Image 1 (cartoon, one colour):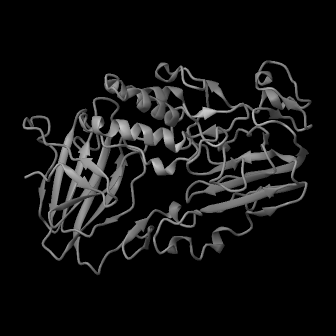
Image 2 (cartoon, rainbow, N blue to C red):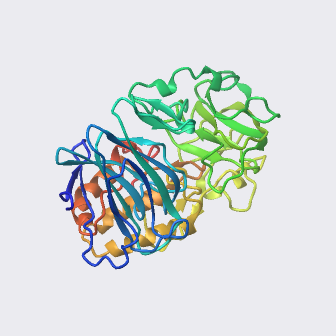
Image 3 (tube, rainbow, N blue to C red):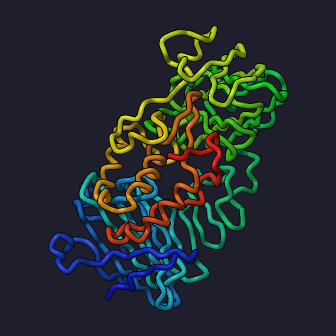
Amino acid sequence: TSPPNLLSTGDGESHTLPTIPSNRSQQDSCGGVLTDPEGSFSSPNHPGSYPPNSLCVWVIRVPPPSLVQIHVSFLTVEGPSPCLFDWLEIILESKGVYFLSCRFCGNVAPPTVNTNSSTVWVTFRSDSSIAGTGFSAQYRAIQPGHKSCSREEFMCDRGRCLLPVSVCDGHPNCHDQTDEANCSHKHKECGGQKTGPYGYLSSPNHPKPYPHQQLCIWYISVEEGHVITLSFRNFSLEIQDVCEFDYVEVHDSADTGAGRVLGRFCGATFPPDLTSSGSHMTVVFVADEGVADSGFNATYQAVSGTCGPSQFACSSGECLQPQWLCDGWNDCPDGADEQASSCEFIEVEMCQGLSYNLTSFPNIWLSIADQREAATLLRQYRVLMELACFEPLQRLVCGMFLPQCSPQGGVLQPCRSVCSAAERQCSQALDLFSFSWPFNCHLLPDSQDPMECSLP
């Protein structure tokens, strides 16, 4: 039997469960009821590409009081988060109530999942386009007091597993916050406060390879009335299509969550000179447990800044109008106005005609490399064009997939109000297409300030 259609996530939200189709001709190779104390399961055709329009449901039942532990050892499922199109989903059953535990997609296998249930539903769904090689997973019955994680994982909250990259990353991922305790060895020789009119910062051990698993945060503050210009002198980090393993990220604010992101950089290409809009700048360096390179060094200096929020500040202190940037003429003495802007015109037809026409890639929030990839992902929304609520939904997804870029190169997420309005008007209509509401609006900036977020 299938569970009821309504799922509780424990936070008051409801999600629609897929209904298993009566014609299972193409589904015969996936799904089923698993009752052995341990076993494995995988997507159809794995390690080959899974077929389109797949729906596989496995019900894992172990005798109480044993609990189900699941380890996904391989994952290549069309992404990125929030997993709109293809996904692997784990649903817990407890006393007749069903809870959505987690949903996975992308190319990074998640950590071990220790459930608190003896019955678990695992659903794999694919849409009509873009397939990966899927997943393979193992499960086993464990006693309530014997929850465990893989050797390289970190366990907290009496059973929650984290990947190494999530430990000591500056963001508590555990309720008991043990993942951010005892982190001094990972922060050695990097980060700190910088308050002088000029200064220097570099990755640990530079020019030798930087250590694995680093999180360095520099907080730069200069005298009020001045802005900060950051210039990279050396730069060589792990090369990636999208900067998600080793990277430098520069924030136009006194902290990482308070303002625009001026850019995220990796590889061997020097970032452009970056100028803050005020007297504060935050620079973050992240390295994972994999490939290490020689890192970077950079200098900053305070410049008398009286430029308006839409103007570009040259290192000389001169202020330029937005239309002077990238116009083929060096208006700044050092030519920074022809280098600093990473904006590009929006070419995706679905997202033309917004309140802005400039975007920037890679999209660091959704790990989208360029406009071509964004256009491919947005094609899935064409089926929703007939809905009465399509317009607010279009503004939201365009704002997420092709975020607004300012002339200085900063990128803005949509304001929370844009997401809330779309959710209010569209969540019921999306149920007709078996779409759960895909975005967590509370992660977006709660502001109407056009310097902090966009109103597409």
